[in-house]
Amino acid sequence: MTRKELLEVTASNLKMAAELLRVYEKKWREEWDAAPNPFIAYEQMLKNKPNRLKIINQWLNARKEYDEARK
Image (tube, rainbow, N blue to C red; front, side):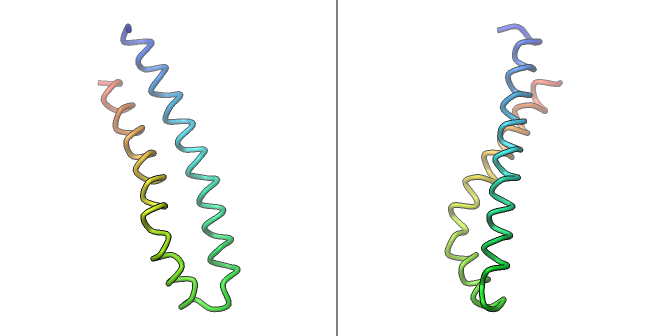
């Protein structure tokens, strides 16, 4: 794979990961707003932390790969 192709692939992966993160951020915000009070919302947030970290780490890894491809 050439450097240009690698950059295109990593940019595409980063774009998809960023879009996925935006969708989930909206979902998480809606879940927070739907909770009857902030304490329950915080408890739910802590329960869902492992799932949220998977999505966030996916974006972080895509960003890292893209940054490395740009060097």
